[in-house]
Length: 147
Image 1: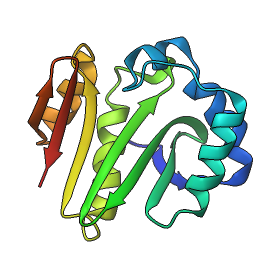
Image 2 (image 1 turned 90 degrees about the vertical axis):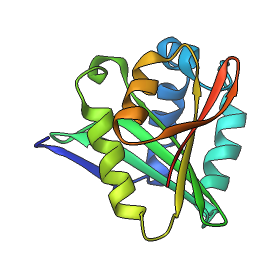
Image 3 (image 1 turned 180 degrees about the vertical axis):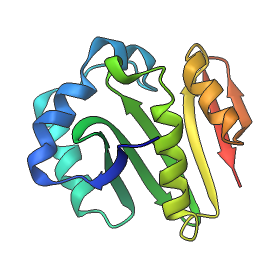
Image 4 (image 1 turned 45 degrees about the vertical axis):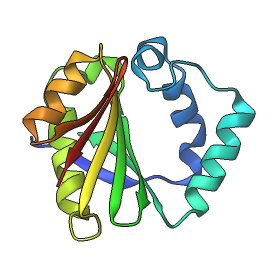
């Protein structure tokens, strides 16, 4: 998809990501299903930027910041989380961005995993389309893996 790219998260992105993280549409589909306080976010954000095992990428489309991919490396596995702001959802940008991310880090991660709410049908469809398989089903939370 032309115009789509990933860029590193910078310190100046803290408020942007906080605002995205607390959008009602994104909270309802998140693994934890709750908003975070400014202090919680600041602690997480500062820690994530300093942690060499965490990868944070802003998804950009035609120069606009439209979402986030974050990953945490545990041994040779990387747990991924992705979201797009609502206006850009359903256009294939999440799938394309996630494929770009996987291609970028496939030499560093043997397995990619993701936790998805069982009622989040667009995310389930996206992960399945990229070859992820369900490896754990805990009623409301599914774990997908790509090897």
